[in-house]
Length: 417
Ligand code: AMP
Image (cartoon, rainbow, N blue to C red; front, side, top):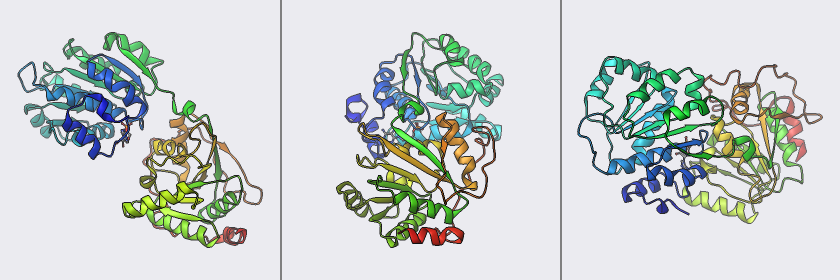
């Protein structure tokens, strides 16, 4: 069922369509009707579930109606734990509000106060903020919350973990009690459970299965690789298995997808590349060939693989790990569909280790390391705790390198097919 059922303003439906959203995600399906009723809501939904659109659409729908109180202060206040998330939410407001044009502003730390003070003097509809800086402005008497109708706490568990909860409660205490409040959190257990009664009134509770439970039908494995040549040899070995009925191999770049597809084709695989540089027509034709079974191995980038729903994909192979942990979840979800089981294999070189740590942290799982006899890695994996380097910015890896097999595994990879 499409977004039409939500009774959204036609301009919002147009913006939804222009954003490429056709089918609501699970959390959108469950939460948008409740949010639009004006009821308080607490939902367990991790990043990547589409939770932002839930509160952004409900807020924009609210803003379509004229304000009940005159003034300059924002009618919607969203608190996020980090600057990055605040900017992402603001971006979603601009994206979904492109035809309704809300006046949206962001207040985050680490930037000069002057421009923010100017922003707070202007009439605003939507304010997205991190708690610390917002509280600074409040203490200087620069914030007017008298018009706030909707108050959103995004990633509340992270705000708790980061020690923001006192700030959040102080901000909440100055927002009118008549407001609607929505709280989103990866989990509704623990600390969030404790603060909820103080912030929400008789909230509806929505609990999505956590990533770990959602992928119970997918066996996930890791093969450590010493470098590109080793990855190529592992890939050749994996695809030699008759159990692989159809596979999607993910690469970090378009060029990488082309190169890996060319190597696989030279090894005799029925394969094709799929990436964002291809015309929509060419992409559709490739997907159709995959659906009909004419392609056994599809080598794709993340952009191209969005929305791919092919039942017979038995394996997902991450030749490169994705930049964001949520994309890992999205990728592996291309297998194990329609009640079938699936296998997701990731090839992890020393440069990919921080990304792997983030994925394990995000999914709450330690992924099983496996070794293929004859293709053992020489470089050992250091012992460190899950998610240890997770905060570190990912560096694009492999972007300029050739994906052609070289080094000690070259001959092995070539001789297999
Ligand atoms: P979020 O969990 O809100 O961070 O959203 C994750 C990503 O999913 C964002 O890039 C959104 O643009 C995208 N998204 C949200 N809703 C949908 C939808 N219904 N269909 C496709 N993509 C969506």
